[in-house]
Amino acid sequence: MKVKGQINDEEYDSKRNLLLKDKGQIRIKLDETKNRTDDWLGLVERAFNFVTNLSETFNQGDSKTKMNILRALGKNITIMDGKLSIEPFEWLVPIKEGYPDLEAEYLELKLSEIEDLSTEIDVFEPICKAWLGRQDSNQ
Image 1 (cartoon, rainbow, N blue to C red):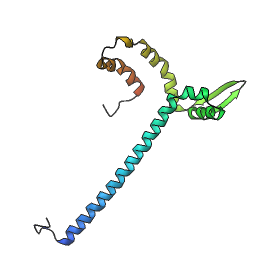
Image 2 (tube, rainbow, N blue to C red):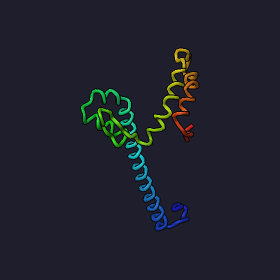
Image 3 (tube, rainbow, N blue to C red):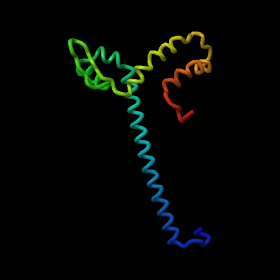
């Protein structure tokens, strides 16, 4: 537009500066999103590692480690007459209540009869949907 004489230098510089400012703001938002994604991924990895090694870490850990694990799982931790009592966090209750049915369904599967990956995916689909609890936006 500048070359064709449709806008003057002042208008060109104004629009150019506005676009550069927008570009900078978009770059900042992208960086913030990347940082949030990296933080989220780190949190998920730590949670996965925590859960994966929970039993072993608890059994081999010192009293401080065991207390930290219990605090991560619930609140109002008490020991009376040698019996441990813990009130689980709300997000754990559906897992605790739903786990026996899901475990039974899982154990009924005869994994040795699965011949290929597509069959395996079909066999596990109802279990995965039950654990998901809601429709995923990424089908």
